[in-house]
Length: 124
Image 1 (cartoon, rainbow, N blue to C red):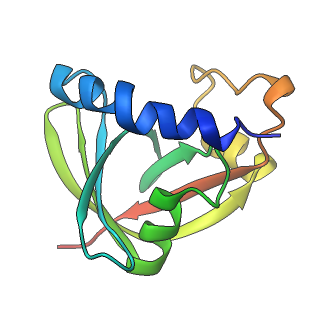
Image 2: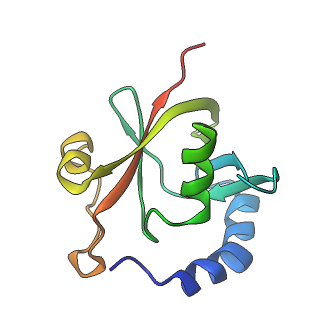
Image 3: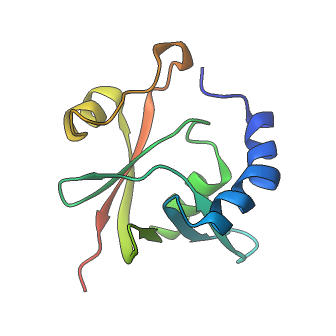
């Protein structure tokens, strides 16, 4: 079972603003699917061949995931670079673990994370 959604709400209001202000974490910028509001979500972004992989700690029902799937794109700021990502798709654990480098720690089994979001670098 992914992390409980109530913890995600705490993260969104308390820890995420601090993480964004600190500039240490990659930040995914996406647009709300109903509100049209621009959101900035700090998270781990793992480079994979041709794009990035995101571990869905709160599952695929998270607002940021649903926003990106609806918009079919997002912007990522990571390692001092801005990049456009497209073609978001949910993938399973086996495909995700094959794509991730061996240096990337796998999520603890106790979390039972089975969904991941993969996005491609958009062609300019």
